[in-house]
Length: 52
Image 1 (cartoon, rainbow, N blue to C red):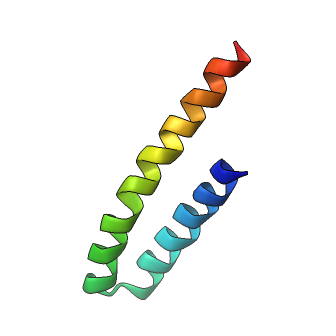
Image 2: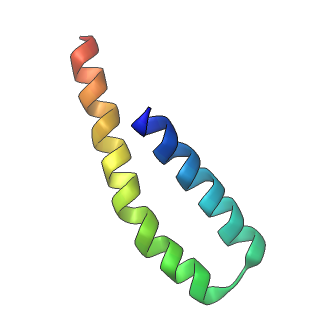
């Protein structure tokens, strides 16, 4: 559930960032999305390790 939420958070945030095309918003979004992307990657590999 956390992984799905993080995925949609990144997807919609990136879509809004590209649509709005405001430099300050893009910079703030890149700072916010980086830890989210890293945690999503770690959640993915943690679940994959449990499936093996």
